Image (cartoon, rainbow, N blue to C red; front, side):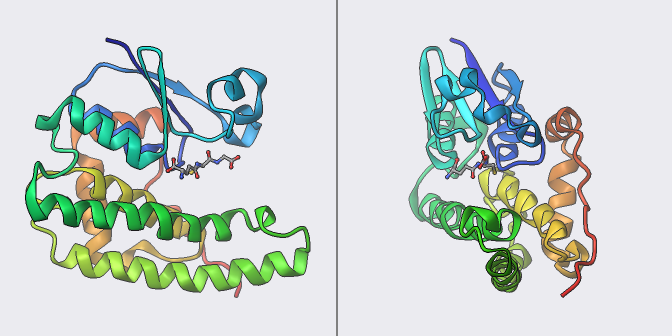
Length: 217
Ligand SMILES: N[C@@H](CCC(=O)N[C@@H](CS)C(=O)NCC(=O)O)C(=O)O
C-alpha cells in the first residue's frame, strides 16, 4: 500500500495532512506551492485537472475532495478516530464536517480570492467585505460548538472537525478576525496544534497559528 498526499502550506489540505500524521499511516507528503501556481503546472494538472489541493493518491487511485479523502482514510483505519465510529455521533460529526467544507470554507474563498467571482475591482472589494462579515458569523457558530467540545469537536478524540476548525480559525486571521476573540476555538486549535503528530504537519508546512492582522474596514 502506498499513500501520497499533495498539500499546500497553509491551505485546506492541512486537514488531511494533520489527520494522516495523527493516524500513524505512512504517507509521502508532496508540497504544492500555490503562490508559485504549481497547481496549474502540466504535471500537477495531470494528477488533478481541477488544479486544487488536497489530493490523496492511494496506490494508483487519485482521490480529491476533503470529505471523500477523510471518509477514505477513516474506512482504511477506523481506529485512528478521524470520525466517530458510528451512530448519532458520526452523523453529527459528518453534519458539521460537510458544513465546514461546503459553507464556511467557500465563504473564506470569497474573502481570500474575490477575483474568482468578478473581474471588477470595486465589486471584488464589496465581495470581500460582505464575505468577511459572513465569515465572522460562521466562526461564531464554530465557537458555540467549541464551547461544548467533549473535549474535542470530533468527540472524545481529536479528529476531522478539530483539524478543520484550526484551519478555518487560522484563516480568520487573514480576514482581520483576531482568533483570541473566539477563545474556545482558539484554545481548541492550540491544543490540537500541540499534539506531537499534528506538530509534525505544522512544522512541515511552517505554519504560524496566529496570523491575525487588523484589516482596514
Ligand atoms: N472542495 C474542495 C476545495 C479544495 C480547495 O478549495 N483547495 C484550494 C486550497 S484551500 C486550492 O487548491 N486552491 C488553488 C486554486 O484555487 O488555485 C475540497 O474539499 O477539497
